Picture 1 (tube, rainbow over the protein chains, first blue to last red):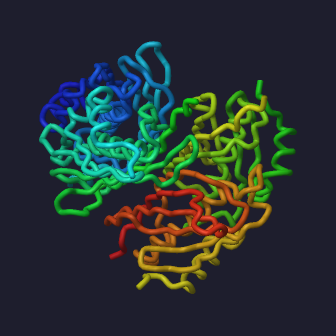
Picture 2: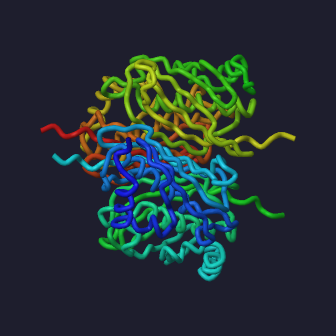
Picture 3: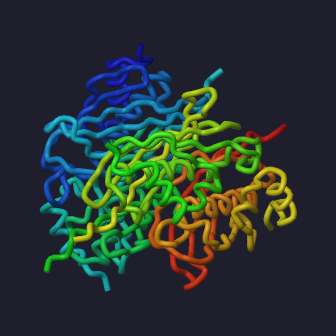
Length: 140
Length: 140
Length: 140
Length: 140
């Protein structure tokens, strides 16, 4: 079972990560160490050529990966990314789906991998992002 | 001399990269293969803890690096990032400065490095981002 | 079917990549866009603490990814890595297995992902490496 | 002043990192948080085309960065790389120089950047590598 619920997450976003709503990012599913999220296309998120801009893809991937971390580690909101590496393959002028999962979980560091896919045609891989998060030290 | 002017850039942003203005990003200086840009802090760009969120830092770094590429290669608006790697060191709850420069320029690929600094206290390194851009094939 | 055979590969290694044998790297399986390879442990490949050193893991991952590229694209020996990103999770003081696969294949760029696993206990993820290769322009 | 001497380093290499000598890597200068090292070219370290192979460049960069970490933090031999990102620009069929420096130093994490240059013609940038090391917890 996921260590965080959608309603807890909504609360965190509303209180502490307002740009998630501003950019039209939405979580579609939370698993155990996984998250699926969506970026709603609109024509202010584009780059020359009309496809979704790289930083918008990164924002989506970052949010999905962060939720995947919380889904495994609980309400460690202060978990912070320490490094992130992205490869970009294709563009899309439509919604984007992120599928994040935890690749490795240590005591202090958690590494995630997130695939970014076009919503249509489905399963077109647009980009892939690997990110490592540092967990806050456990309270005792 | 830079191969692109501030007014040409403003035109490209207005026509094709609208989120740059939405996020409050502004170019402060364009050199030959360099760009200095600023993200204006506001409390909707934050992460838990109140510092500027990672994706906002990436948006700033990406814009500054893109302008650095255009400053060297001219109006190659379709230049596209193929990979990007970021390390995050510190947070700030204020404006952020990006200093982008070209590290290596090949015929088709240009690699940039961007330092992200707190505006205050000045010169505090927040993050560093390396990104490689693919240039569109020259028209003939 | 793979576009390259083990005996063609042995020939390339003997003629042009001699360190592969010097380091005790061996291909165990070649698929269509995949490769499984092994690094034989010995006590000159270690780091303080006695586990296999990072650069040895990278050498194994690089060779496996290169073979995966050739298995899909044929004898493009001049394919060259343009960027590589690695995350390291755990150490091992024994043989290491690399499982490389192609994540995205464009006309000129091919991106691979390689998982490095301990041979024993099996399936312990030691590291993960993403690398992009530039293919030589096709002869005509 | 550097927190480690050349003779202390020679001792560590001989006892715990034997491949450094096997690959012909040599430190040329140790500063405070910096290291300059050299890879001696030989024709067993090459890739198709005859230039120095990527994993050999990574081995050199990794060693130089590790020494830079020790030059700042002292004899923390167990410092371990947690992520490494490399961009490759050009090849060389001769000696390679690495110039490593610390970019950011935190309590537990140290990030380094290493430029790899051809020895001849001097100052030709071959590759650039960023790596983050985790320091062992201080003894008390």
